[in-house]
Amino acid sequence: MGLASLVLSNNHLSGEIPLIWNDKTDLYILDMANNSLSGEISSSMGTLNSLMFLILSGNKLSGEIPSSLQNCKDMDSFDLGDNRLSGNLPSWIGEMQSLLILCLRSNLFDGNIPSQVCSLSHLHILDVAHNNLSGSVPSCLGNLSGMATEISSERYEGQLSVVMKGRELIYQNTLYLVNSIDLSDNNISGKLPELRNLSRLGTLNLSINHLTGNIPEDIGSLSQLETLDLSRNQLSGLIPPSMVSMTSLNHLNLSYNRLSGKIPTSNQFQTFNDPSIYRNNLALCGEPLAMKCPGDDEATTDSSGVDNEDHDDEHEDAFEMKWFYMSMGPGFVVGFWGVFGPLIINRSWRRAYFRFLNEMKDRYPSTSFLAKITVSMCQWFASCTSS
Image (cartoon, rainbow, N blue to C red; front, side, top):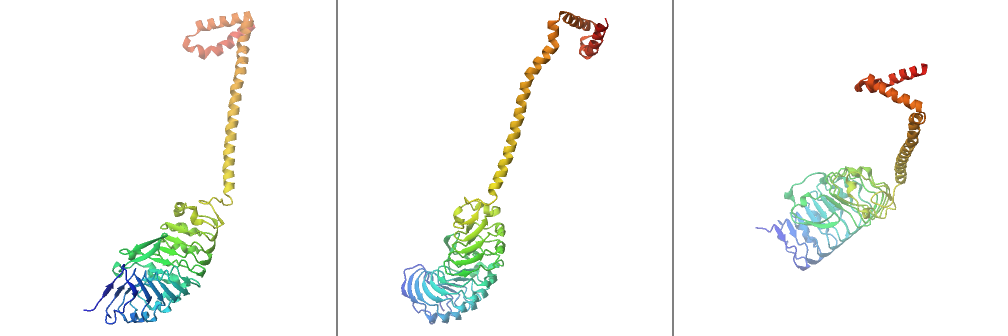
């Protein structure tokens, strides 16, 4: 019975990888991750035609990726990260049509990212961060249709270190849920490609490169994106308004670019209150930055003007009320003496007045006294005048 799985990860193995597979053609898992293995990867490894999981990350391996590995066309996971490998990324990687994970991070690879990578239609994780890669991001990267579809958990085995939300996390049982592109910390230049078709992409890290141009407007189509790191590039223009529709986004870093304009404030952007994620974009303005946008001061002035106008109205009303009460005193005095003054000074008028009241009291009941007093006064004074 042949050996199907060889897992020697997380030990203290050192020296070169032993050639123990010459008669193990049925081997489909080779996992020697996280040891101290050194030397080059043997070209004889390409004879393992059934190999599906090659995991040699976290060692001290050097040299180039042997071209014989292109014979392993059924590979699902190709993880050579965290070593000292060098040379160009081989274009024949695009022939591994079953590949789900391509992790070559933290090595010494240089040259361009081969466009053949775009033909990996099942790829869910592309990680070539922390290398010396140059050139531009392949414009066809948006064709990675695997990042728009679900995948069965049965196709994943082993574990993988993935940088998400600014932290390095170890995924194992939930690795099948991860959809990630990490090209950070290289020398990549040019513009950002259109990625709107990658509807299940969860992490996009293009930080620490030399990218220029605008952030694509359709980036808002990445509705399931949780982590977006575009920091330390030379990106310019506005933050696309479409990004407010990225309701799954919970980690954002746009610092150290040349972005300008007002920072969006609606939806998910209301939660991004850490000014450091926008640091060193000298033309950016608005909260949470201290720099106000043009027009913000005018809005404040207009608001202040309305307040002042209301205050003036209140002051005017108070002033009028004050004068109303002040005028009541003299008015009362003038009115009182105008009516009762003559009665006090002129005896004949006073006698006539009291005689009038007595007659009214005797003539009318008390209930009708007030209602008829005016008419009676007019009649009485008329008779007095005629007499």
